[in-house]
Length: 392
Image (cartoon, rainbow, N blue to C red; front, top):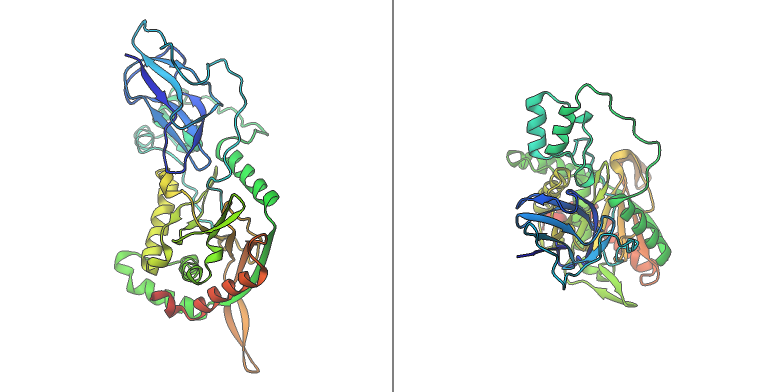
């Protein structure tokens, strides 16, 4: 009996996915759990495995974008014909790739650096056993991840010179989606960025004490974790920034779900911390670190990337003080975090050395005026300068 191969639905808001490539040729024999094809959505790339054994028949070629549940292929018994009512696009269809939907998860810029090569556990084990440097292996998995078959191919061709990489390459996969989302954001919104400096002396002193107190559990809140907590509290009192525009109307969210981006060699991912206002600083710090590690390992689920209501983004780790972060549609605001620097605060007529952090808030001026944005930013500043309030 013929078995349908459909575009999977990997999250509540996923509506479609693009077939990056088929792993087997049309007409090839496949086994259950074989990886049939790779897909990319506007949030991630992943693999789709066979649910049965048989002969693969493709009805949608690589490059096609299909809606969730749409049939893209079949697994047939030997000699079995395609069902007369088979759905999907024929393999010879040259229909161009559809644009990704505007309500999807965009990239952000809060940076967690990682130089670790993306590779599967089995690939790492095989490479270690063979004494193979993974840096010499070309990954063919999602987002360039090195899988076991890549290690096997490298071992088979060991000793041969690696072909040079091309000087130019088309934007594809996650990189193409990032480019589309950023350009769309700037074209569709009236974006205004406001800046404010924060004295972080008290906050950093409290952070040092918390690191010592939580040393046994290795919980180390970062400056950005403090900002995420402060933003979550401030958004409960300035809810119009915790919103999105839907069909020309502003919709205010009931919970504060803040996206925190992770920088990877192939682009940015934005894991989401749910219900930030209802979580402690300790919980937030632990969750940010855990999601960042999952991003590096390629194990994030779509639900962990799905639909932030606000975004905090940092370039402090690379020495940037102030920048103009681009809003993640359909959100209406994004908060940028710069690096800590030495500055001066005044106590009466006396200058005092202080550790200064610059915050950059970009708002959609169509629905948020400058003053409400400034009031939100001022409240974040006040929370960070009286950091004991972040522990409540």
